[in-house]
Length: 292
Image 1 (cartoon, rainbow, N blue to C red):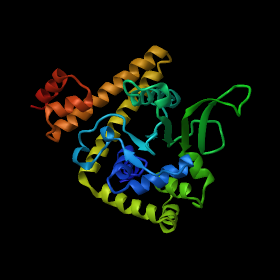
Image 2 (image 1 turned 120 degrees about the vertical axis):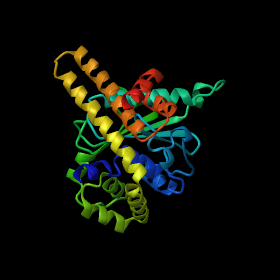
Image 3 (image 1 turned 90 degrees about the horizontal axis):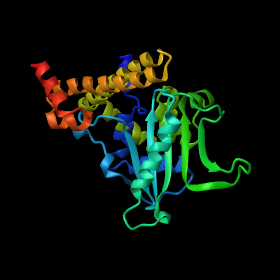
């Protein structure tokens, strides 16, 4: 029961994505983003290529993020990270650069690159700052107030710091983070009572966590993440950088294999398994044979 409660909280990437990307829940995402970014959002659009709905919760494998276009001229990427892999800074830079590059269409100039906001919600502390919500810009090393490169901002929200500092939600952002974290039920009830949109999110959350397909998929996601993490730790303890890399790669591969085996048990077809686990067709066929 404890494990099920852990993986079914709103900060789980599957639950978060289902909740905030569902058609009809744009108002929830709009208010949440307005409070973090501090801007007025007139138009919001979930990027279709990364939508996740219950019809294929068993099929979507890999890192899940939520990408949103706002006000026609900016892109927001939200990523949930429940475990510390010591690579969040590089991951954030990688995702931002990749998405910014892909937003520029053929024939467009650099001036037409859309602004980028990267929001990383972390269930661990990463920065040595006191604030639980840190937004960053690229500034001159001497004249810190001078922004050298604009058009891109990174936000790191550290939930352990939030839990330590906030004992009663008093702002809309605190209400939303209380709900997403879902660690203190008394505070969650306060947030629900104070904010009608959080109340709506709670009702949607209750539906999602009662849905068998979503629970099954989230179980597979958590299982793969734990397998990957265990292998990474084993590789890291060797004390060599090469060992860490090998250990992580093995963990990723083993996690994908185990996820594929679970999908086979659920009678998911071969093409779908190959597509979402990134295993080769031959590897998946061999797994089918093992089942037989």
